[in-house]
Amino acid sequence: MPDRRIKTIKSRSGVLKGPVSFFVLCCLFFVAATASAFEAKVRYIIDGDTFILENNERVRIAGIDTPEIGRDGKLDQYYARQSRAMLNKLLLGKRVRIEYAGKGKDRYKRIVGWVYLDDLFVNKYMVRNGAAFFYFHKGNDSGRQKLLLQAQRKAYDEKRGFWAVLSKVEKFSIQWVGNRKSRRCFLPDDKFAKRISWKNKVHFSNLGKAFYEGYSPARHLNFWPLTK
Image (cartoon, rainbow, N blue to C red):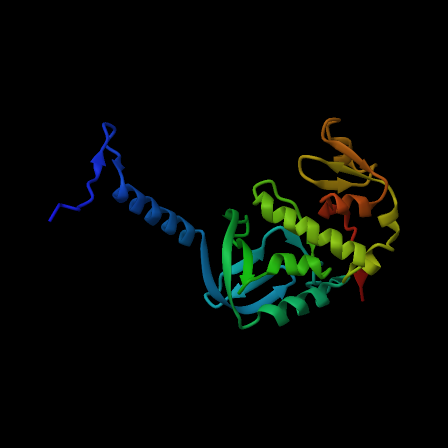
């Protein structure tokens, strides 16, 4: 019987070619994929974009931002409780898959990730239902960020969740200045707006148009309405 053994060839560079090299590449790809994602059970929901796993690791949902719940006697931002309730109903006690986003952790040592409940993309779900808005980060996956922006446009057009009230806030209808590099926007007289270079500066006739293009208000502006 003829010898049917598959030979592997070693190149001059020392790199294996043929079936062995293919197998090694597959193994490396599998290791890289599993190292960048994991599954865990959700133990507690902090707010609409942050939760705690059973091992006490904190997870910050990537690419979105939600209204803040008031701490130490401070008032809640509008829709903060509803946003938390939505995420609580969706994830509490459930096992989720988390894929690391950007550098994997933020400055507060929280895991930053793309979160999946079975086939449901949780980041997108929160934006699509008007419980969160898209929050651009340069280091995040561009494909997923496009999905979040598309979801935000649909939620805004349909006035889902907080958009029905937010779009009626006084500052919503005035002009804003955006920074193309950071995708943050500012009131025209804000000191940070004045520092934006001409090539990165973009003008919006109202905040709705800024949101529609993927810009979000700088946090120091305290734009969000408060609830008692």
